[in-house]
Length: 316
Ligand code: NAD
Image 1 (spheres, rainbow, N blue to C red):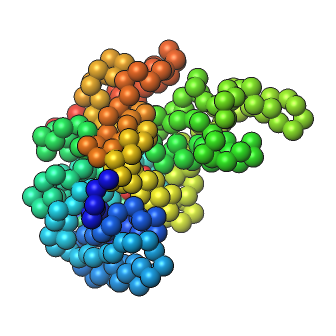
Image 2 (image 1 turned 120 degrees about the vertical axis):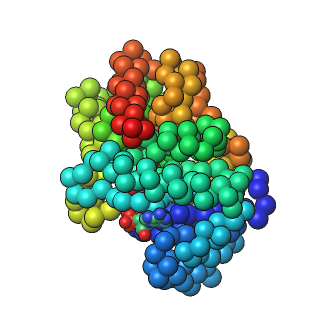
Image 3 (image 1 turned 60 degrees about the vertical axis):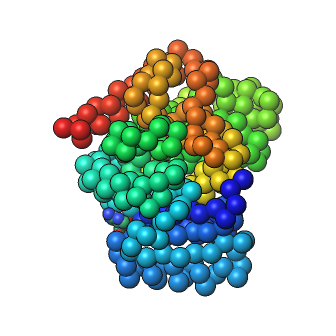
């Protein structure tokens, strides 16, 4: 447990301000700082958040447009950059956001040299690969929020259909945080019951393979639907990021599907993909022995190939 822990959130847009808000309410860090190049917006967001701290747990909030606000941070969550427009994929943001995130990581490490960096800006897994290469940080110290959010979407969807709490649904989305992501159905359970054996009120199995495929597509396209309706996704990523921050700052060693640059993970090297990983005060460590069926392994390799291609294009 880190005493007087400090979280800095970079980017005070829809996502960054929601990460700060969720972290304050959950008491994820003792001190929260918000940084954005837009000074007026940051000042307004910080004031609005500060005005509610009477009702939050033991946290305070500062912020501004000088990176000095991040000084001494234990965790830095990066949300700055362009966001998806309706219909746009996360990959289409890559070139713009690679430049933004690259310079932010450099600046952050000057004022918070020991920080663990969590990348939320999209495409978060590709940006993690580039940040890892440019910074020289070990892979456990720079990782993407990855499919923590997508896994929460999946567990909510299964919980809704079965009438069981999301915490009792054991199912994972892995791979790219994006179009090639997929669920590990081979290991999905509700309590201890394999998902295909779960029965509805009529006593018949509730899920078929076709139904599971439809759920996977719904989860994959969930962000597009939200963006179409309100222009951004922010609350659930705010909560997902706060959860990751807590795992780090409380040295929980919680297993979360974050994306680190993998080495020898079922034969995959040098690509950041979300897989079950142990998250604690030293960062994130993928669990190499996580089982994948042959079909799931093929999908993981397809995710790796897709991201490697985008990263190669950005490296020039
Ligand atoms: P937004 O436009 O509301 O906010 C982006 C903020 O970044 C703006 O306030 C802008 O001033 C700031 N910014 C730009 N360049 C900067 C720089 N160099 N330094 C500091 N701040 C800078 O966008 P948003 O809706 O908050 O989305 C932010 C990012 O988060 C997008 O890339 C989006 O795709 C991503 N996102 C990721 C996930 C995920 O699960 N990984 C989920 C939702 C959104």
